Image 1: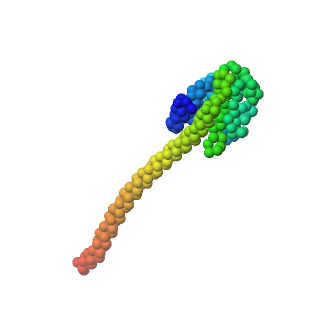
Image 2 (image 1 turned 120 degrees about the vertical axis):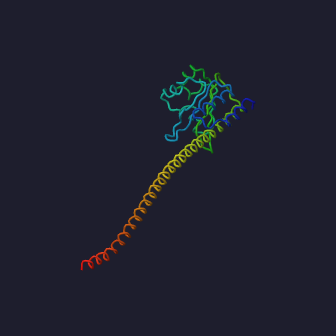
Image 3 (image 1 turned 90 degrees about the vertical axis):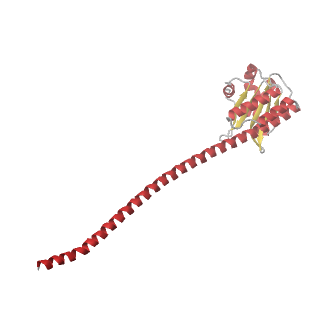
Length: 238
């Protein structure tokens, strides 16, 4: 395996997981395609909700390529990619114009200059999550080294995608925890302020009760003195 291919594999393992998934996939395609001297390429992933094979990223192709592929109205599962998905093995197309399964897209391939293809399953823990596909400008017999390189690259792509998903979940969970902590702090702050308010009310009540007790005591003192005072006045009057 050439140094260029080894460098490409090493660079894939160091891709920044903080980036958007589509950016990650496009970067992987670029590095793999350049290492193979490819004309272009694509990545297809299995939609977890519909279980359908969906093209999500391209390399070296026009922006409307994905739209034009689907405009044929032919399911991707009937193409060579469908065979790779079904068998779990790579599928080689040395010459697009001699591949019956490529017939619906032959005109598009001729227009864009695609003459050969290889479809490589992206596997994670034995499960296929998508396909990494490389297209060549001329009819091409893929070598064992190229197949080995693409096998490793597809496996790495699956691992990077999974790790990026896990990273995104961790970031989301951290944000949720941070929000929960902030909300808890707000509640605790409100409770503290309420506690201070209640304490102030209790102290005020205690002051009022103390005042009332003093008034009551004073009243008792006055009430106790009044009978003696009345008695004295009665004596004088008599």
